Each structure stands twice: as structure tokens, then as C-alpha cells.
Amino acid sequence: MNCEDVQGREIVEKYITGQLGDADAEAFEAHYFECAKCFEELQTLQALSAVLQRRRKTARRLPAARWLAAAMVLAVLGATWWVRHSGSLRKAERAARAESPARGVGTRADELALLARPRRGWWR
Amino acid sequence: MLDENAEQARGLAERISSGDPVAEAELVHLFSQRILALLCARTRDPEASRDLLQDVLIAALTALRKGQLREPDKLPAFVLSIARNVAQAYIRDRSRESHDRLLEEEIASQAGPDLLEIAERQALVRRAIERLDQTDREILLRTLTEGEKPGVIAEALGLSPEVVRQRKSRAIKKVADFVTKL
Image (cartoon, rainbow over all chains, first blue to last red; front, side, top):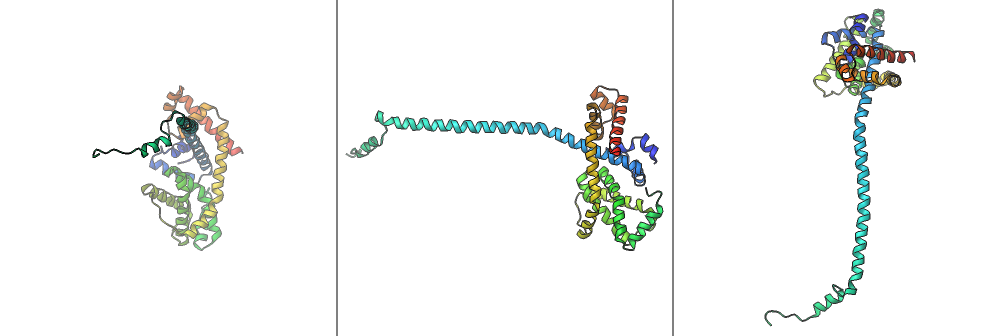
């Protein structure tokens, strides 16, 4: 293999994308090990491929990152709502307890009166 | 490179077999990037290739120290065959063997500047890509990362295969020119 073959048959591109047959790959390797020009081209295309692959990976990761961010915002909003809502529930409960002695039902005095009342069993 | 310097290759091999550490560093400098390019292309794993590079260099240096290269002027072919064998072994079985740590560290420190050069080249390529047209970028992306043929790309982008071929060649040339000029 010589430099003209490498240029004419897009050998470098096929080599880095794994589209070169074994015999051609070996011939190209033997060539670029001794040819500075073709090795330079190989290095540039490999760098190009690496950079493009990284860009593609980042682009693919972006939508997932957006979904994750949206889920986190929802979780924070949900937690805030729950904290506020449960606080108001507790307040309402406390207010209800505070009001109950006025109605005279369910107070501690009522409970004691019930306990002090003589019991009548079936044997009496 | 070594085509014109068969004598240099012979001298290098002989100096390594006689235990010259400077010659070993020269060999590492001369072949590291070529070996790495081969390993990346064959294994498609740049991370593993960096480790495998050490294996190739260790194997080559160990063999040269023992004088196992019968024809010293065939040093590039010798290193190349070791690189291929290491890549094949990795592809066949991804489990790794332990090696001489001391020699590994020694070679890792010698191979450092080459990796730096690769990083610099990638930074230049990144800048060159930014200067390309969006369609050209898409064509390069599909060609070099997906291995798509011009016909397939043409269909996806609503262009003719010939236009895709031309734009691809021009884009690669632009990137290569940008990298070599800077």
C-alpha cells in the first residue's frame, strides 16, 4: 500500500470506522508505521472521531439531564406542599382539641366520671 | 519515517539489546503514538488502549533487551506485530495480566508527552469543528462515529450521495488544515 492508495480509497476513514478488511488493515498499518504523512492524517481523523463521539454522548445525555432536573423540581415542590399542608392540618387538629371542652364531650373530667360510676355486672 | 532510516532502526535495536536506557526512551518516543493509533482502531476502546500501549512497549523492550529481534532493521515491523498481537489478545479475552510494575511505571512516564500531544490535537480539532457548517458536522459525525455510507447520509439529509462525499472530503481537509497550521 502507498500514499495514493490511502488517499484514493479513503483508507484512513475506513480503518478508524472498522470498515477495512483484515488484509487492507494490516497493509495500512505497515504503511503508516513508516509514513509520516499518512500517520498524521490518521491521528487527525482519530482525534476528530473522538471529539465527535464525545459530543454525541453529551447530546444524548442532555434530554435525560433535563428530565432529571424536572423530576427534582417536582420533588421539591411536592415536599414543600406536604410540609405546609401537614402543618395546617396539625393546626386545625390543635384548634379542634382546644374547642372540645366547651362542648363538654370527650374531656378528661367526663372520662373520670365514667370511671368513678359504680359498675353493674350481670351477677348483680 | 523509518523507511529512510533502516540503519537508525538497526542501531536502535542494537543499542537496546546492549542495555542503553536512552535508546529505550527513543523507541518509546518513536513508536508510542503509532502503536496507540493501532490499538484505538482495533479495540475501539481509547481507555484500554492506553493501558495496552504499556503492554506493547514492555513486550517490545523485553524482547529487544534479550536480543530476540533477529533482523534489527525490521524493528518497525517487529513492534507492529507485537501491537497487533496485544490488540488481538485483548479482543479475544478482555481480562488483563499483571506485569512488571517497575518497567510499567518507567514507560508510563516516558509515554506522557505523547498523550499530551493527543489532548492538544483534540483541542485543536474541537476548535476546527466549531468553524464547520452544521450540515458538514452532521456528515462527519455520521461518517466517523456511526460508520454510515454517503448514500445513507444523503437520504437522511436530503442531499445527493455525491454532494455528501464532496462535503465530507472538504470538511476533513478543513479540519486537517486547521490542525496542521496551528
